[in-house]
Each structure stands twice: as C-alpha cells, then as structure tokens.
Image 1 (cartoon, rainbow over the protein chains, first blue to last red):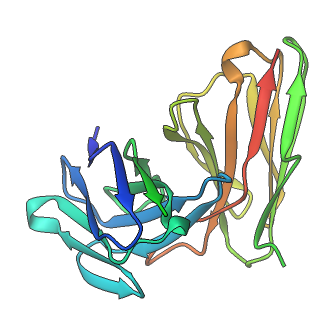
Image 2 (cartoon, rainbow over the protein chains, first blue to last red):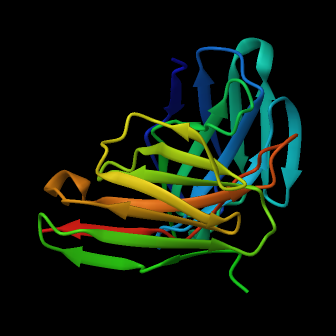
Length: 109
Length: 113
C-alpha cells in the first residue's frame, strides 16, 4: 500500500519563527489533507490540497503531485500552533485516508 | 453546536467487558468513519459507512462492530475488551465527493485495565 512519511518527526521553535513541514508519499493521490491535533487531542482539518498552493492566514500549503510531496508552512509561529501535524492521503478518493506518523511541534514563548 | 460529537469522552473499563461509543454528526454528511489512534499517535481507519451502508472495513477484530441506525449516527460496539484495545477512538464525517474533507469528533479515550 501507499506509504506516507512526514519530516521532521519533532520540531521545537521559538515564538515568531517560521517552519516548513514535509510530507512524502509513495504513489499518486487524489486527495491530500493536512490536520492539526492540538494538545487537547482535537483534530482540525487545515487544508484539502491534492495539488497546488493554498493559504489560510499564517498557514499555507503546497502539493507537488508529480513529485509526490506536500509542504506545510507556518509563519510567525504562536504557542497555540503547538501540537501534532498530520498529512493524510487517499490514493483513489474513496474516503480511506492513510495518515503519516505526524510532526510534533512545540512553540516556546 | 458541536458538528461531530462523541460520547463518552473517557471510558475506563476492565478486560473482558463490552462497551459502546456513540457518534453523531449534525452536518448532514452521508459518510462517517471510525479511526483508532494508538499510544504513538498513529491514526488508522477502522470502518466507514455511507448512508447506513458499510463501505470500508479494515482488518479489525470481529469484536469490533459498527452500527449505523441512520446516516447521522455511527456507533462502535466492542466485545470482550482486551488491553491492546486501549487507544483514542475518533469518529469523523465527510460530505463526500469531490473533496472528501473529513471532520473529526473530539475523540474517546478508552483505557482497558
């Protein structure tokens, strides 16, 4: 089956810093989503981005489908950005999301 | 209003017991899911229902049985609980094609003692 690898596994930032999280996937996909799991465990959908670039406030994401990777950019990080960021893909858009192992982000004040 | 709600939020029980987790969504979505998140935070899909019909059934022990009385509800019943069942279980829903964006509940933390 498809493999989803995220890097780095852990990231510690000072408040105000920028960061880039990466998601590599081993096969073509029709659906790619980024999620944030906050320290209380809630999973929030950040982006649906099977290709192209999207921006939402301080967050933006880019997926290069032909090269099988996606990037999540966090600018001017805040302590509330802490948590785990997951990339999830669905090779055939059937709704069966395959999750990466996540990047754990800690933003220090 | 909570879009996808799960009850209970916490569940502590003894090995061998039977327990249920309930999920309801008020988004009008046709498709609902159950995911399991283990202690290493790895998320894996278990089941998916579309309008009360089972469409995804991953390799999950028969002790786990989903039930969908209507398209707004998807419950998970677990028989003969084992220590390895301890995890956080998430319910999710999606409006379906074309984007299949999934919306998650807050999770149910199950601890089997």
